[in-house]
Length: 151
Image 1 (spheres, rainbow, N blue to C red):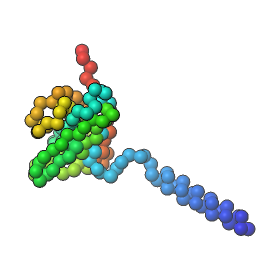
Image 2 (cartoon, rainbow, N blue to C red; image 1 turned 90 degrees about the horizontal axis):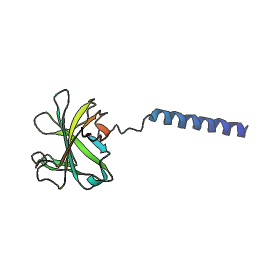
Image 3 (cartoon, one colour; image 1 turned 180 degrees about the vertical axis):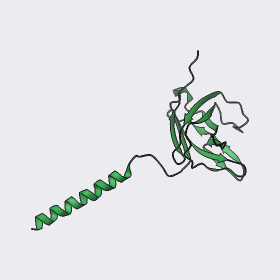
Image 4 (cartoon, rainbow, N blue to C red; image 1 turned 135 degrees about the horizontal axis):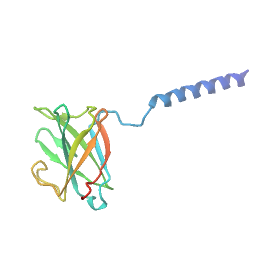
């Protein structure tokens, strides 16, 4: 009888663990942390600086940088490491920018790559400009860079 009760207990625990794992679903970060990760840069781009801008179909201006200080309005570009950069996305509808937590689809970002850290990435001409189209889920998107092909 004790073995039968142990078996029932093990089955119950297995069922609980199984339902818990099934409820987890995708392993997508849905925390609304306002992140844009761009992969697929050239190896020669490692160590270069990146900033990106976009406007959603709802006319919300987005900018993506490594750091933004709303008090001083200072920005720092992200640094490409191992062909990847992760940026924090901010939305600006007038007033003070806020972390982006939306789920907009097909947002076209202009990605600006600088050889050195620019004093002002919004006015400094970039060394390289690429375009990526991303879809966000609760403020998070990961996209592979598809370099422009020369004609």
